[in-house]
Length: 356
Image (tube, rainbow, N blue to C red; front, side, top):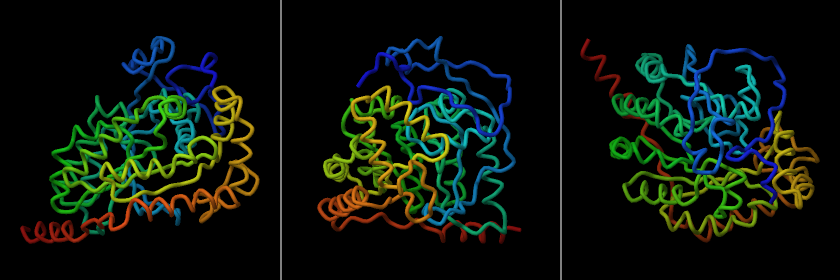
């Protein structure tokens, strides 16, 4: 790896042009303590938090291969800086770049708890699990300051509504008591993303995260009766593909009930961002990795075909998928993630209506 020419503490190494448009905003500065821990000069690489005012907060998921019906994202953009993140493309719809802007301009939705409560109180709302972080991490560093995710969990608990969470941040443990209360009625499932056991890989692939804290998070949640699935996602050929079995073994030992995976796909602007990144950080294997990713997606980095885009095709994809099957067989026999309780919220609504 060649870190000398890279921007420390960031995943993307450039700001690609926005494919749609560019907007100007008034911004206020926030500086990230993480910069100093990683040796980054924060005055040259600062994070900006921008408040936005959406009319709705819960999104219906139309994609047939996602595995969720509804999602919500208290934040747009993400400081974790994961180079492969599919959510980077969504930042362009807000007028920003999918590159460094995605990591440094974080859109904050302070009205999210209010909008959520308004939705699930409606007579017309039929109970479905709502996934927090369907796009960007609801426990990213901004949450420490704004506590929007915590407020949303309080709403879910108040109305006995099922919720799932996807995160790679140990900050979720701050809300352990809330999660335990939700778990009593089978209203919560947590998905923790862990892509590597190697700090060297983590440092360049996901610069603003940690491995040890994520493993400890899986263990702590599991010990308190909160069901945890671990996302081995994405699997990137010749970067973390060799870690599937050891990763599965470790997360199972830490209490995870299941694993899920995807094979990396570099759609939209991510192809250019990832290509630039890997040639700067892993020049010795860049071409090999890029060619192997292409071999999983019909000869292209960009794969948007439902059904194959996340599992891939070809020999390398087949090997990866078979390793995951083997991992489940070896380390997750007898384990299963429980289905979330959909009845309690409906009963709660009926009880509330009787009061009137």
